[in-house]
Image 1 (cartoon, rainbow over the protein chains, first blue to last red):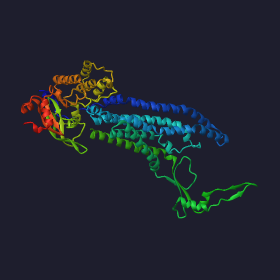
Image 2: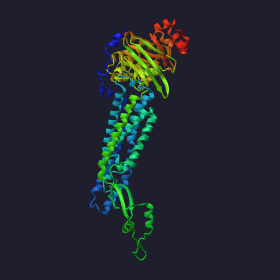
Image 3: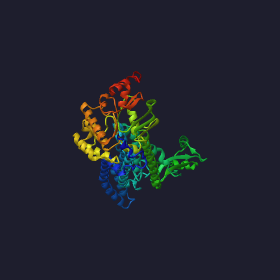
Image 4: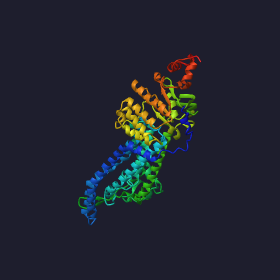
Length: 348
Length: 242
């Protein structure tokens, strides 16, 4: 009988060398090159557009900054004109770029497992000699890393594009920590892309169907990004507190409130009620004109009330970048590990 | 003699129902073993457990002489063709050969190309554009190219026309004759099994009703054919005189 062919290698589970990673790399490339090309096309088109609008804008901006003397009316008009012409486009681009990470995660990564499970090809893929944990690792990790790296490279270009509006000289300047652009700069754009990929991978494994997995990835990413922007980011480091109404424009304002004579915070209603008693002085400045000296803050201060603000200074940009990048990286590792665990334990 | 599959009180339940229960069996190497039973008997569940796609809820299953099902060592020696022979529809036959080559420690590219040539399957054609019979042959070629010691086939004949069935089984039997590969296949097409299967496992309602060499079983039941035996058991084991 053919028992002879069996006896050659008895249960040697351990000394079997695994299939080399470079062979899996070929598989990943062959099966996902179109997804990678799609992302390259998307980022390439956006980069081309940034260059197309950014080059003339930087030209115009160079002229504005060269304006002399800077305090003259002509120069401040030049700044205003620059703003009028370029800000709307820059703002629209910033808004548009917010959806790039979830698009990448949803369309390039969510189908990786979902399509296998939906079409049944996982029964082929996961019974090959590579083994399914290794197969999953060799697909998800390179894809996520490559896509995040591409997004990171793209965000460098965006930083260059956006420099005029990060400058202190313009009226429409945004604090560098402002939610609209904070996650498009530095390490966070790459980190959010990585997180989108990890969410996509897990959604694909849990949902097992391509279209719902894509939708779930976008929804989960959006919830996470909103939660981070609205609630989390302002607490990365304890906000600074000051009692000046004149914060530098680069500071990210977190909160403002009044305190009474006893040093306790006042409710908005209490402040309004107190201000009812404020009657601004009216001066006669001409035969038929008067001028009202409005200074409620001064009035409040005279009566022992104080105005407070809490804010995050612009100097915290990089610490905040690393904090956000760090937790997103940790989350992504966790999600991919969970995905691989599920692949190992919850296949069929 | 080594057993290609050994199950010990193996069970699997999905959402409260047992798809397979208290299944103990040992299939020796060198057979074409047929797993027979009505739909829902647990055939696919047993095969999924054997190739490691599913994990047991109870008991244990080992393959190829004691290797844990689904382990790297087990997968190295087993090739599995699932029901409806799933292959990537958007990849060409050639790409699928390379894919399988790169997903395994060894793959006999020469054999696989020659086999596809004999079958008249164009290497450049996308799998999705092949006929059902050709797709089944392609999936089988990918499996046999791995030179497995155990070939596991889940309902390989279910969606094939009679000619494709014959050709498919001819490929399997050629590999059995040439390499001595052991085969475990599930089917409810009994007529096709008559000529090829020399070992039978009868599964019904999640439990093994009968297992053994076809010739022994037939002799002990005084029956002439596998089909007759299987039918008798599917209708209810009590009716068969022991």
